[in-house]
Length: 365
Image (cartoon, rainbow, N blue to C red; front, side, top):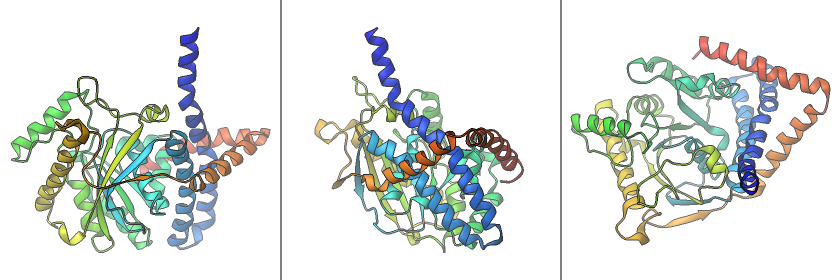
């Protein structure tokens, strides 16, 4: 009986945040859809400005749960500018929370609405979210030989033409680093050895295609590239072996006490333009990430573990930046669900929004 109560209490830690974040999705999509229709006759720039503001509201609510609710300590190293910039954000990838980390940095620059992702193609089928991410400026890509460079360039050029602020998030590894799937890590290391590249321990060999297309297409539009390395505390077992990084569910259950984020701001002039040379440059950047993570996880001196070298800042996110969004979206959703007509509209938005979204992404990149 006691064990059952404990398990129930544990599960409720993520049930409430998940219910609110997913439960407000139809309300958000309705608000966005109304603006999409109203702005059809306006220049694209006006649509983007309001869309970015709407996205800021929703993602601020998400960050209420991932930061304020969990109480996680966000520790930032390196040079994160205070001002907004047009950037490409390159990061190691180990779990779904990595998406949220980009939001955590962007909100501290007042650029949350500018976050857009390069995502694997299968995610476009997510109900409501998959369609919206594409509409917000996200780019879906297929791997290896199926990668469509022309589509990605066209989408990025359209964003530049509309003067869309850009905080483009790319995970060059192409898939997550998972210590529980050693074959993926071994294959990545074998490929690096075959290509004469340094073998990496705590990250996978990066793929250059999406990064090269993004930088090459927007080189005159960007201010910088952010090279971001992320480590989650509490991901080492009793034997000192690295464990799987926390899922969103585990993170919301407060299983990660601290997240460490190292940022290196790189000028465009310091990045090779040709793909062959950029590939080696990108691998060298991941070698730097690997050394940081080796220090974090494997340093012989235990006092040097669980932190990156250099100065750090414990950055706490104010409730003023997140709670109003939660109250606003939660209030709108609650008021809709209080009436019978509102409930019908809510359900229809889930059903028809998903169907229309799937149809849209199947015929348009």
